[in-house]
Length: 153
Image (cartoon, rainbow, N blue to C red; front, side, top):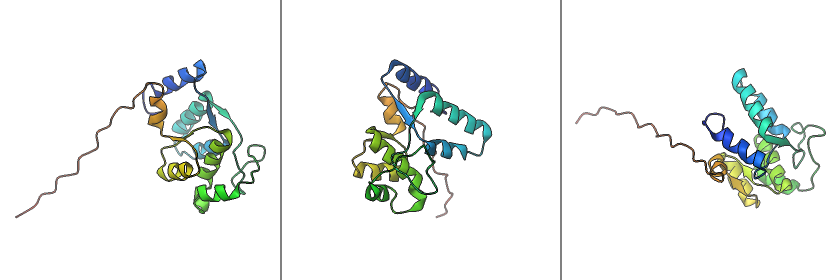
């Protein structure tokens, strides 16, 4: 959204018209806060908070969840499955559990998270899918061709 001219405006228009509601959690903020480039980090955080509503995560995870910004859940089996039983996927599992709790689609371009979420019955959209819902098509970026390697016969 930040890198595609017109994408932000499409989503902003849909939010203002009441045809789209975007949600985010402290996990999204935590991840964006780790972006090393200060200007990019600021831009991404501003875009997130200007379009979205902060909600608590749909689960709680020790050392990841923030007090008053998470929900205690008794669906630990689902959470572990979405986490792929790997601590490195805890943030993704918190975001997916939030989509499940809020009964909304999860927007992600991350394939593992999308697969795990679909397996748990969560609707998943890519960024392109979400924008397409509002008539916006992402520009096609041609893939770079493989470099030519000289050969001898």
